[in-house]
Length: 523
Image (cartoon, rainbow, N blue to C red; front, top):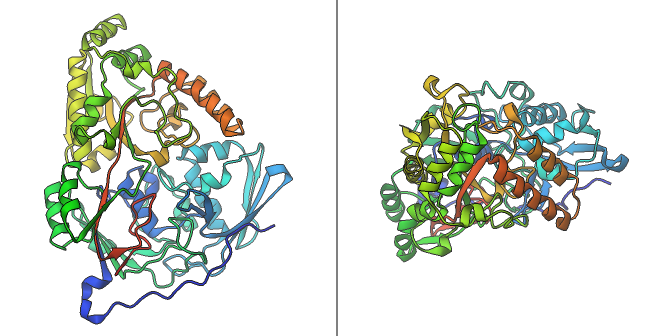
C-alpha cells in the first residue's frame, strides 16, 4: 500500500495590492543568528538550519503535532517485516537549476546525511543496501528493523536530511559546498549576501509544494512573499526599535527583558512559537586534558548551579525557565529524575576544588569558546568562565564572533593549536527528545558531535532504546541512560528556558513548533 497524505487543492497565491508597494512582497525577518555557512551539513547552527529549510526540502517533514508527513516523497511501502522500504518521489519536482529531483539524488543525500547525523549513523549501521530503482523510486534494505525510519528522514533540526543534487550530495561534509542549488520554496541570492548583516531569498517560481494543507514542515511549504530578507541584528535594542518602527516584520527570538515592550505595542504580537524550549549545556572536549578525565568532569557537578545560568539570561520569572534538568528536556516523555541530585544538591565551589585536587588536576589552562555577538551565549559563557575559575580551574575565555566559534569548535587539535576545552551549547527540545537524536548524548568517539566523547556503555544503552518498543519500556531505558550519564558526563545540563517570538500584526500564518518564515503572509 502506498502511504501518503490525501490530496487537497491549494489556493492560488494572493497578489498584494500595488498600493502596498515593494514592502508587501518582502518579509523582513531577524533570525536568531547569522547564516554563517550555506551547507546545512557543515554545522548544527540554527541560523544555518533555518536557511536550509528555506532552500531545500526533505523527503518527509513533521506536522504541527510532529507526526512525519510526506514532503518530497509521495509515499512509501514497507515489506519483509520492516526490512525493505521502497520510497516514491512526487512527480514533477525540480531543483532550482531546473533539473528533475531523482531517486539517485535522494540516495546520495541520505548517504551524506548519515555521515554526520546521529539518527543517520544508526540507520547506516542497520542498512544492508540502498539504491535507486528508477528515477522516482528507491529502496532501503535493512539488516535489522529501524522503526524510527520516518522520524529520522523527517528530522527538522540539527542536520535535517535535505535532498541535494547528487553532485552536491557526493561532496564530503568535511568540505562544505559553497553554491546553493536547492529543492525548496526559496532560492538563495548569493550576490546579496553580506556577512553579519543580510541574507536574501527569492521565491522559486517553479516550486511544486506538497499537495496537502500547510502544517509546519509536514504539509505544503508556501512562499507567499517574493522575497525574504534575513536582517542580522545581534543588538537587542536595535532589533526592538526596528520592529516597533515597522522596519522589520518578524523578530524570531525576543530578548527576555524586552518582552514587556513588545507586549505593550498595539501593532505587535508576542507569542511562544517553540514550546520545546532551549536547553543550555556545558560541552567538554574529551580529546585533551583536563576534560579527557571523567573525574575532572564530574568535579564540576559540585559547583555548577543551573539557577545561576538561567537567571543570568531570563531573570527571576520561573515561568520562563527550569532548573533541576537532566539529560532530556521537560517536553520529552523520557525526562526523569534518575540521579538528579547531582544537580539539585548543595552547590559548593570548595567541594569542586577538593574534587579537582583528588582527581589530579595539574593546573592546565582551560580554553572556553566565547561568542560575544549572540546575547544568551555571551551571557551564559561569562557565567561559565567565572564558575570554572571559582571551582579551581585555570580558565580563560577565547572571545570571538559566532562564526569563528562555529569554525573553531570543529578543530580537534589541542587548545594551543587552535582547539578548545569547553563551550556553552544551546539546543532546542526538538533535538533532544530521545536518545536516538540527542546529539550530545551520542558517545561514539570520532563520529560523535563536537567534543567527541567515547562511552561504550552509553552507546549500548542507546541501542537498547532503539529496541525498547512501547513508551513505558523506553522510559525504563531512559532512566538507565541518565544513571550512566552522570558517570561518563559527556556534558553538564545548565537548565532549560523558553523564548518568545514577535511579529507585526499584519503578518499571519505563523505556525507553532518552529519559528520559520515559511507559509506566512501579509494581511
